[in-house]
Length: 308
Picture 1 (spheres, helix red, strand yellow):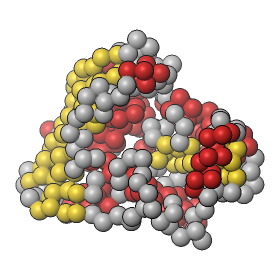
Picture 2 (cartoon, one colour):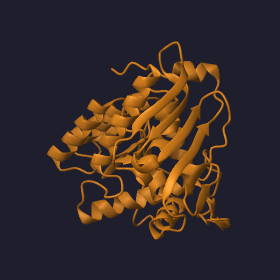
Picture 3 (tube, one colour):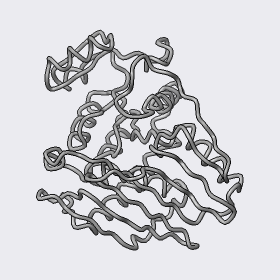
Picture 4 (cartoon, one colour):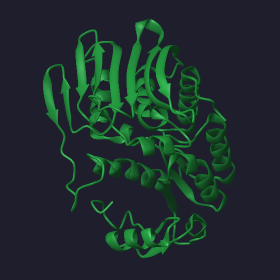
C-alpha cells in the first residue's frame, strides 16, 4: 500500500492476538494504532474497511465480527471453511448494506487482465485445456497444525477460480480426484480433473510436501498462453510464443511472497467500489464466491475430507 497515494489509501490500525507483534508491525510500517484484539478494530471509528488476513479457520468469525460492527470487509481467499459460512457472510453484508469481497487478487493482476483479453479476442482460438499447479514444501509441524483446510483451500483455490473464470460459470463434473490426508483429516496434496461441456478440461495439482512448477498453461485450438511461476501473480507470460514481461511498482523492501505488490490492484478495486457505493465487486461478486465455495467443498469431499 506504500506504493499507492496516501490520499486514497491509508492504514490506520492493525490488530493481532499478541500485542507485542501488533506493536512491532505497526512500528515497522508506520501505522498509528496497534491493538491486541480484533474487537478493537471493529470498534475503531477511523476504520472504513478491514482486510482480514488471518489463518483460514478464523476468516468467518473475524469477518462476521467486522460486519456486525458496521465495517466493510475484504477477506483473504479462500473465503471460509464451508459453503454455509460464505452464504452467512453474504447475507449479513446484504442485510447491513456493507461491502464484502473475497480477496481473489489473482483476477486483478495485469497478467490475468491480458489473459482474459487475449482469450476474448480469440488469439488462441477456443480454450479447451488448462494445466496448473501450486506446490510448496512445508514443515511437517506446520502441515499438522492446520485446523481448517488443506492444499485445496490454501493452494488449489487459484486453479479452481481460474478454471471457473475461463470455463465457467457452469459447474463442472469432478471427473477425478486423488490425494493424501493428514491425521487431522485435511488434504496435504491433491490431483484433480474438472470436466466441462464442449470438451473443456482443467487439470491441477496442489502439494504441501513438494515444489511444483507453479505455472499455468491454457491450451486453445490456435495456440496457448503460459503464466510463469507464480501463475497467480505472474510478471512473465507467453502468448502464442511471444513473451510478455510485466512491470510492477518497486517496494522499499522485499515482500514476503513473490510479486505480492500486485495486491494493490485488488486494493484499488475495493476503493473504487466504495467510492461508487457498490456492495460487491463485479469482478469477484458474491455469487462467484458462493459457486466456487460449493465446488471447493465438493472436491474436498471426494478427497475424503469431512466438511463441518
